Image 1: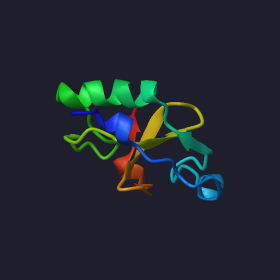
Image 2: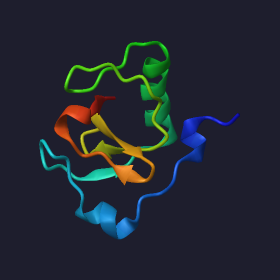
Image 3: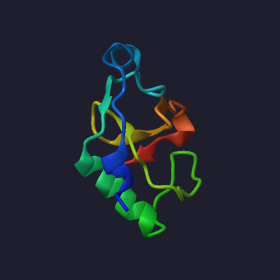
Image 4: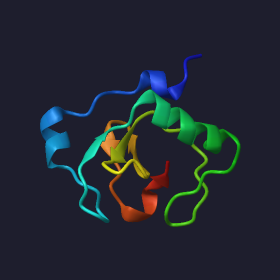
Length: 90
């Protein structure tokens, strides 16, 4: 079985250019395998929670990371979830 990070789909480049962090308005970029693995390690260990304080139980298959590298927003089924509370600290 392959890991979720290896199954990720790319976000359309035109769409990515229009997206921004819903909190700080910083630009977003596709999260690299290293960022996804750091977050997913915490998810597997039961230590990940989102900005809203809820535990994150599902590993990320893809994500969009804020320009400052501090927050990643999940991408689920190819759809970015750009809600402030859904952000996960990297």
